[in-house]
Image (cartoon, rainbow, N blue to C red; front, side):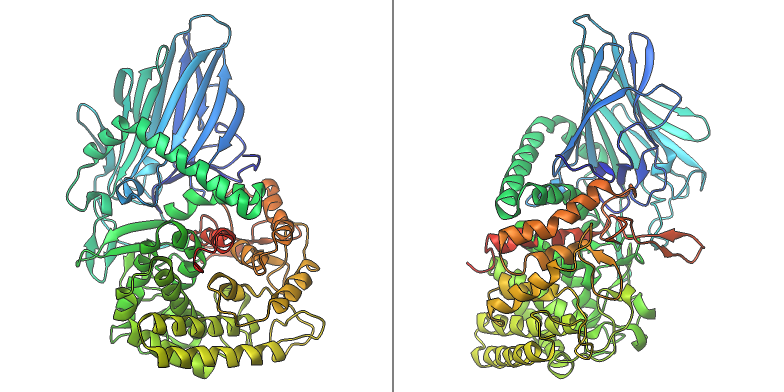
Length: 635
């Protein structure tokens, strides 16, 4: 990978267990949670009696980092000191077709030593984890350590399981776990300003493999019921999971290497090497900002967390942009995203004839929290109705399974009714880009309604309701013809709002006309729109619209993919690659940033601080070009 990661992925596994190195090297700063708060993890090597540091921050001198590379599932660094080279290999096996691996909360670090000068060297390596990994912050409450012969476990004494929700929070229940496989493995605890657990081994003659895990025991509260993750649904212990991870390392490593190699090759064919590197960087982040659990009926729920936007869970307008990745690799997980919304929308507490925004605030899913729950002032009716219709259409086309769509067809028709009434020219309301505020006559939001109705038309036909399908399809085509006339600026570009001549915006919602082959717009319409967008590009990409200079990474790639012109796509996406490569904000991929300065957009928090979007699942939207280029949903 030539791309310099803005933050180096180490162990991203789920919204709470997610560790990163926020800089150019593994030793330039403490290891951090995706939120930026310290979750210190320290790796050290004693080389012929001299102590050095290869990960994190301590009083030992840092080894020299000679190289760093990453692919979709692993990060590799080469460190040198005192005539010894250490190769560090971090693996998080987030394979989408294997739920056991996808949800197993164990990351692996292989440390391999070799001599640089031909002489024999004594090499002792250690990995130690701080109490910050099992608390919201250092010293929050007392911790305790337990040990069996193979695994050290540390957790809070109080164990407040699923007791609160929020955004800038770390887990404070469950157990961080550490184990190792190698020569002369030793497990221990130590105490300075905080408590640590440590694993060490002799790497002089053979590699050492460390396993770092987290046992949250219960992961999600779902309408009053606490649910377990997939991996321990039948009571598997973390000790068993750690042992399986260590013993199966070589086989899983090969599977991960094969997957990453295939993904990169496919992405290069679809959009070039820089595009492929963006997908590599996004993969672990996207999957690790979800949690896969089973509801009381044994059905999959795939719960996203809105990272540094408000902490909402199962947010529709976060699932919608993320779904291209899952349509390609794991369609059933899209249904897992939608189930909480259908569950909540069927509850009498939801009073509206349009779709909800979310089902709670992570990790508590007990009903919408956005906009005060059911406060009508700041809902997103056209946005969420269109999103749910398109998600259902896309996932049904992706794998041909009809039962889920048939089960929820009545409420889908209800939401389509809202779009028929309000979608052609939406009133003043929010869209997913709610940070930009309310907007009436939003042309891109109208496109969402048009695509959603066309999608329901396709669904109805798949379900044997030909007349209904024709009705929705006809409405979508009539609205598309009206849109083409009313949104036009007259120079080949199309407006931000119907009543704002000369304005511009990304028309990212139109991508489904290409991906699903609706044929709602003549090819020249989106070709001329994309050509006009190229004129608006700043050093780090096209602004979202004419009101500000900021943009969104997901929508930028969707806009670039509108026509299928590979050269135009690569030119449009290149500034995005440059942004991630050069931004001074060392955070897991942000999706909201300034196109002129290359800085993450920051907004004030209630406690007087400032944060910006990062580590968000919407980067799954970067996979839209791969979805479109391979014509996955048109075959």
